[in-house]
Length: 345
Image (cartoon, rainbow, N blue to C red):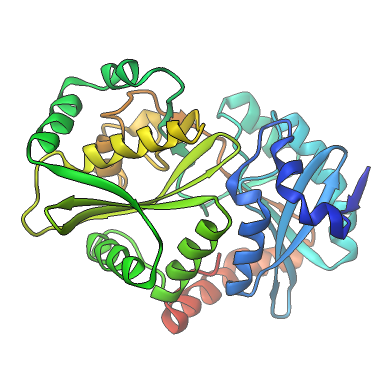
């Protein structure tokens, strides 16, 4: 019922992930597991029943091992998750794992949440930014897609075209990574923390080399005025990073950039586009929410916000988990950022 993947299966890992009941996710791929080694995570590749599960493992001093399933497991319901994690726990306990962390892409309902809580899972703070998000269906013809945007968005796209803004898919060279990183860091000031430059360079270049990532620049003449990086896997594109210049902005540039990304994704057989991160649907108009600005921009492409169940811990060793939850977690995450300018997760 549960086993570790063979070397040959790991080589072809993404094929198995794409067959999961809940569909494949880019953060369950071989490349993501390999990339996370940069933060001292160790990827483990398992099969639980017929579900391919990529776990990343990190040692927590004095407490044991933490297992995290980024955007996993690839299930279709909380009932299936309870079964999968119950089986995974039998192996985890033997390996001194004190907690299993999950954030599956199962749409939120009171019933789904209640089943997880009743089964011993604890709801915790997010690791990934898109517990709530806007997911665009881009399988329709281009004229139907752009007609689905609100009028203000369509006007913004046309304005940028009139101003001769151009968008290009570019290579993740060191020079281009530096441009995107500078814009991203400047945009983030006072809004969110930014990892160190090397982390982003390695991420963007490694996913591009795997054929699962693409960088885009929007130009005003020869000047890069907006930039974005998009991941794609199993027919789904994910807006990973993006920023725009605050100097001499052209109205509509960011909307036009996203429109050209959508067109590029369609040409590469991508049928869904996750804009990756908004306030919850119930708070989408809440000016006090930290994601309000993101939500306002992304819902201009579609008003529908998808809410997932969120991030949960399954404690396996009560004492160790209590220490982690009350004391150790805050200490190690703060120290990690102060020393290495990077997130612990």
